[in-house]
Image: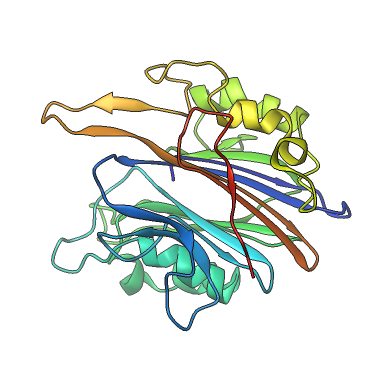
Amino acid sequence: MCTVVVSLAPGERVPLRLLGIRDELTDRPWRPPARHWPGSPLIGGLDEQAGGTWLAVHPGIPRVACLLNARGAFADPERRRSRGDLSLRAAAAGPGFLGRLASDPEALLSYDPFHLICATTDSVSALTWLGRDPANGSGRPRVRQLAPGTHLFTNAGHAYPAAPGDPEAEPKALHFADKFAAARPPADPALPVAQAWGDWLTLAAGDGLAPADPAGIIVRKDLPDGRVYGTTSVTLVALADGALRYDFQARPGSSDGWVSVRAG
């Protein structure tokens, strides 16, 4: 994931809404959301290269977890593990998993930098790991509980609402965060996609910004080696007591083509 918007409003009928935008090499093979992991109740898209996922939902709780790559020091190649298993583990175990992982430096050193978000109907937790600190051989993970309201994450970190230590003047946050906060949709699982998400669909399609715009959330970059890096999918998730809404878009940049993922 390269942009995540999560909005928590305890007391509402649908208290949790989440937008996840995945940016990746476009030739990296993947499969749309389904129950890809035998014996597990989790639903998510499958990264066929590493076997994990960028976003996983546990429909029985309900709970959602997602991952963004972060900027920092990479893990030792000899011990590196795919970050794609972290969304699965957080969705399965819950927010307590983030604290346990943060207190296990040996486990963290196996992962490249990341931001891991785990959300339920009444809480949103985030773990940031920026990798090994060359000065002392270890890193300083940060776990935080997010306050009610709308939050925006990018690869740079928690960009809105910015607090001390957060990235400042992140272009995506400057353009989009207030708009997402002001357009909080009903996200009712019983409604059609357009009625459920309202103006969030327009924003999730890029709000008219060009793929090369620094503020754009739907991106495309032609790399010197001929490969293309860009947005490969968009996900919208809403959690309510005993209910889940999970909508998926495999044609980023379009307001049409949304597919509602079955949770049963």
